[in-house]
Each structure stands twice: as structure tokens, then as C-alpha cells.
Image 1 (cartoon, rainbow, N blue to C red):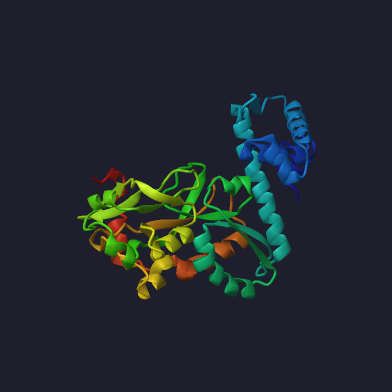
Image 2 (tube, helix red, strand yellow; image 1 turned 90 degrees about the horizontal axis):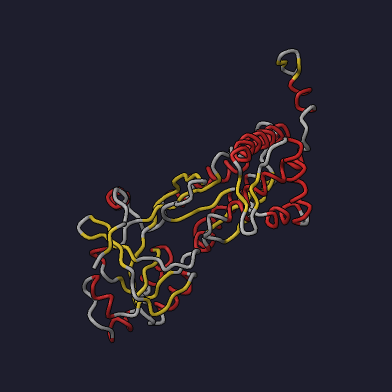
Length: 335
């Protein structure tokens, strides 16, 4: 029986609401993506149709939900409050429908994951085999990306992000720590200048990683227990660590790369470690999802499976190193 409030059932109150559920869902998507165009793509509508849906919703509620300018959209105070309550309501509805359809044990549906390409190739991909065998009605869509904004823009259930998280609208859950090493080919080192300390990097060709925001990654080192960062003067840069690794093997210069990526090249003698006494601090990898949203059961199953697998501690990292290195953040600049 429906719960009553002042003689009126909750079901009656819902039916008497002066708004359409579809318009509310469209508004949530506009608020999450920050544009009519992005929301329109999610629903296969035109931006004009999305704008009209939001206008209808505002008229029904009698309040302005979005402040529109020629350059941006932003939530009004009323819009932010409505968004928070409405988004939570739709999440609860989705959970209820999912649990009712799946019963106590069956897991089905689509889980969309955002991964750095290295994780997709070396860590997560192999773990998905057992997961999909255990849950044949589950489908996993993997999107290679390093942009946390893609959680909303590309409709991802979660991402794996390496390093600190700057966006306060996202929530991070630790996955594990990965060791990075500084490497170069023996052929390059044989003809290059001395490389005995961090300051010597100024005399070397450095191969640097470009982040998703277009900025160059600092190189991090651990000196006397203190994490330090250097902005190297790069001779070549790439947003693909596979490319940087192949350039390092070819003798193009010095690179700082994940141990699991270069372990075989080191074992074959194609690369050599440099500055091992100041190896980079281990980097934290985290599961990241949108704040204020409950996690559907099918998504929890995937996350828990990855946490139980080899990804719970990334290759090349010892527990003592992780404990020592992650007590401090690498914020100071080395000279």
C-alpha cells in the first residue's frame, strides 16, 4: 500500500506533479554535461528540442533552473537544489528497477569504463576474461581516456585515474600503487653526457608525457625521503607512453615510465635504469565516479572484481616503498 501523507498517497502526489519525467531527465543531463548540445547527443535529439524541454520544466515549476549566456550555462540556486534531489531520485529508481529485474544473484547490463590505454592493455583487459565468464549477461564497454570530465561527457560508470584528483564533483576509491622508473637505452647512455644526479638531466634529451589537459608531466623523484618534481626541458613529447617507451628503446633520450611497461625491455637489456637512488614515488591509481550518485550493482561487481585482481597492487611496487613514498605529496621543485 502506498504511504500516506496528510490523507494523500505518495503515488497521488507524484501524479499531481506539474512536470514531465522526460523533461526532468533531460534537465539532469544538461546540468551534468554543461551544454544543450552534449545532452542532445545523449538522447538523440536536437539542441533546440533539449532547450524547449528545459523551458517547459521551468514553466511547470515556476522557477528558473538555468542561467543562460551566449558562452555558458550555469545552475541557479533553485536549479542546483532541484538537480541534487532529482538526480538522486532517478538513481534510486534505476537501482530499484535493476534489483527487481536481476533478482538476488544475476548480474546483467552494460558497464562503461574509462581507462588509460596502458591499463586497458596490461592490467584490466586480462582481468575481464574471468569476470565475463562468471557473468555472461554482463557487457563491458572500455573507453580509453585520461580525462575525468569524460565520466559525464561520455556517460562512463567509472574511470581509473592515476595521480591526484582535482575535480571536487568526483569521488575516488583507491585501487593500488604503481612504480615509475627513469630509463634510457645503453646506446644513448654510451654517447651522452654524464647522468649521475637530477641536475644532469638539463644536459640530456628528455622524452616527456603530455597529459590530457595538454600540459607536460613533471618528473618526480624521491630524494632523502622527500618527493621532488622537475619540469624537464623535453626534446620530444607524446600523450602515448607506448610511443615514449619505443623512442627510449631506439635511443632518442631519457624517459620516466611505468615499471610494468618497460620491465621486459629492462630484462632484455634494451633499456637501463638511471638515477635509481632517487626513483620516482609510487603513484596512486583510483576508481573515480561522479559524486552524489549511488553505484549500481553491476558496476559494483566490476569494481570489486578489479580490486581483487592483480590491479590491487600494480606491478613493480613494494609495500614498504608505497608506505614511505605516499606519506608526502610531490609538490616541491628539485633543482
